[in-house]
Image (cartoon, rainbow over all chains, first blue to last red; front, side):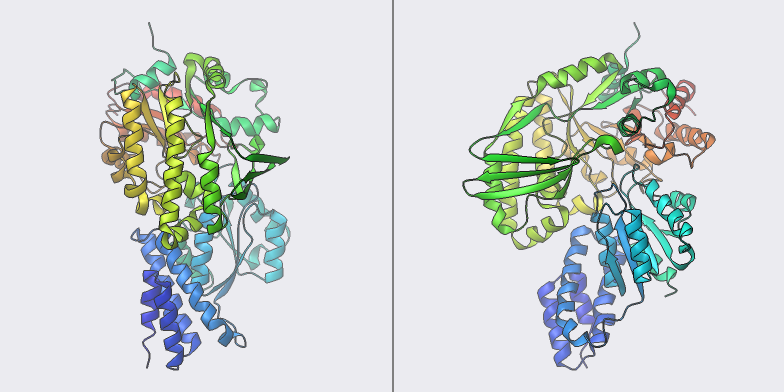
Length: 211
Length: 373
């Protein structure tokens, strides 16, 4: 039986060529695509997330791992068209209105995708309305809000209030993050959670969906 | 005769021991926002930033773009303005590249943000290289002197030869974008390194002009985050900073880094850069690093400017909590030399301007040197 953990190791090392080759070999050996995803790709990204949070890994390590993972997903996608890629929850994520920074948000989105979440990334400078509409349309489990400036941070509170006003607050968990954002601030504005970095976001988001 | 705010800041930056902590406060985000929205406090309507800070009793930290401007030769540069959007196209004999930026100080920040970077794919390398090689630095001293004279002895005007970033950071952030930069560095390292060298050459040409400016402190870099820059810092950043710091020192000037991000893994690398001042130092709770760690890692010969995270000015913290934080900050920084009190890195738009005055009062109460709390 093919050892799918080899795929996980290649993802951790950010070795795209090796990861893709091992994924192809795993399929040839009869491995189940869902197993490759769970025990190869998601496991690898989970380890990358832990190492990122612990300080061992840096952004480039995460980027290489994510690129390797995405390349493996391209190999697996045709086989998953009928069953789809299993997900543990839906996340709508974006940088709030007026804020043009997206790297932190991109890191979180990548980790969440790699961990089994279906992620709808709205990009940067996202209006309150767009967030609310997307949460409603996608029936998101989690709304992730990112802000890198103290001038845009307060818009997170505005969005939470808008969710409340629209009657949707109880149906979605809100997680916030970004350079000026702290746990205190998250508590202050009534967010459900805060994550300092992408690695921690995986753990927190899994807790939010009960995984 | 009592020292002015500017003299006190410069003295500490040069390593002198004073009788009390200086305070260089930055409020441009707050000021820009409330000026644009016409919501300045009644008392301060029509006042300048420096006047407001003078009224609060603090030294001013005023931002000015750069003492050197960039002009272009042997190419056509076309700008389209659709406020707040700016699209710039560089039409060169070897090809055309373009970028889209957004610039609107009404929400606070004073710099342009790139919505679409100049670099899109590998075919852009020769064009961007051409643009850099045909960029002509021109002095912008008069505009800087005008602002400097307006601020006068009430504080410092923070500026440098370039806008904000070192050459490699310009390539990483401004030209390519962080994520694509690392993919390109992995896939096409020679091309990326060539671009960095061309950018360094441009910045050297700018420094050659800037060094003639009557400017005491040069801001030579900004906006690091240890998860981004650490892996490439020693190879690409340190040699440049050493080169620039040595040049500035040889001309009696000081080098400053705007270190407002997550700095833990970068701090051990900082002393080797020979940069004199770490400014906009932002400690916990806004980052993971306490001030004691900043001081320990930076040592006694690097001036720390900062210490009060922006979030502390937010209404979610009471005045009592704010005062307790600042008092503890002074205690952590005891004996207090090589330390200029400041924000990490700005007064937020919903911050209380009167907390600037509170810091001044706390300095009067607890900030005599050496600090003994």
